[in-house]
Length: 78
Image (cartoon, rainbow, N blue to C red):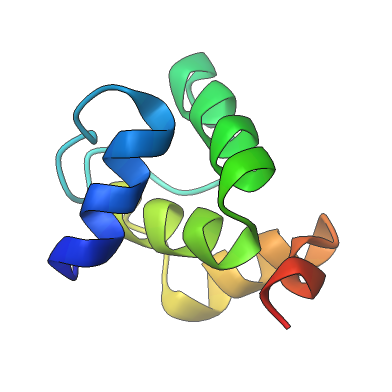
């Protein structure tokens, strides 16, 4: 993950990011990840949610894109 993106996520969350690929898939996200993506979306927008989920989950690029798209969060990245 690019350092500037990681720094922005840290600022938004106020804590270190989960280790890379520490969450399996997107079907059942842990509560802390769900809270994190809400905070990230509210403060940084959908593109940062994408970056965070792509970093912390083992989901593919396409899977994360579909997850963000289904929630309508892609619009905040336009």
